[in-house]
Image (cartoon, rainbow, N blue to C red; front, side, top):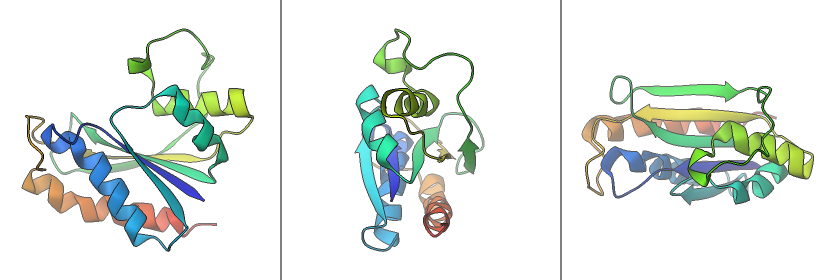
Length: 149
């Protein structure tokens, strides 16, 4: 089963796009094909469900780039630094969570990062029109991943 983790702050404009894309992708996939989590930030506790997933997709807003641009890329094996080094929870990244899943639970599933470049991160519950227009492209990519064996 696929695990889709959308993260960001839905009260900061385009920063909430991770939640929106994750929820839309979960609805677009066949029932039971994915578990969707919408979280404000990545925390070490996510390493357990990550280790049980067949594939993980992380979805977030990007602060840089042309607003509305969708980027999708595979997250490769973590570098030389062990995941279980002391650090604050604000430093938890998708790569660190994948490494933790491998170190703590013996399994690091294949993972993909999907981002949409934001235009405004001001206080607002609404996404900007350019980001709203990019959501279907990101969802389409995730649905295609969900159909892969």
